[in-house]
Length: 145
Image (tube, rainbow, N blue to C red; front, top):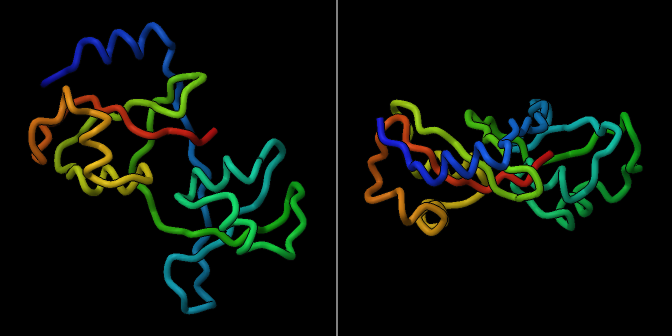
């Protein structure tokens, strides 16, 4: 396994916390793929919800312009399954993700609302090719929660 020691030390010093993403229920009645619903909970903000669903707060507001922003309300959101989550660095919009067997950089990037080039920029000291060995620890966008 390959580890980036400075990243591990930083994560342990800063006390990385698991970030739990909001989930959505796919809208199966509209015939539109990639759309679903999320139920608002106490403490939600436009920005935090948008970060979880890889969109902007203004786009979410446009999608839900007639829905009151209150606990229990159903919001329309972009909805697609995500397999990966991050260990978030408290006080930061970044976290860490450990590569598992079969991971592809493009798919990892999509789950963290970026692209492969964005991942390369964040991890220039770690990523040397698009083939990532299992166990590699990557810095990823992790703004939710």
